[in-house]
Length: 108
Image (cartoon, rainbow, N blue to C red; front, side):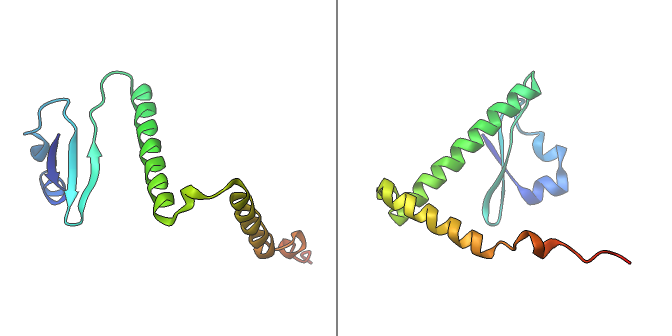
């Protein structure tokens, strides 16, 4: 995998990618670190997109697991989880306006 700076990619575009062998993934990085992957497409775009979405979902799930571990949520019991769900649902019901709050007066 090759790395190309975001600045170089913005200013030089195709020339910046010219040094990358065909079919190789490119990592675009800025001052804050890695930002994007440029992934080559081989053949069926629909199948490739499905695989890419699956990989992104797995990465998101791994981030969620790490966050749960950091906060100790991975040790929660079923009862604790149920109580937290009930608490959040109750808070949402209190915030949600009733059906009559959205009705406007008839136009005359």
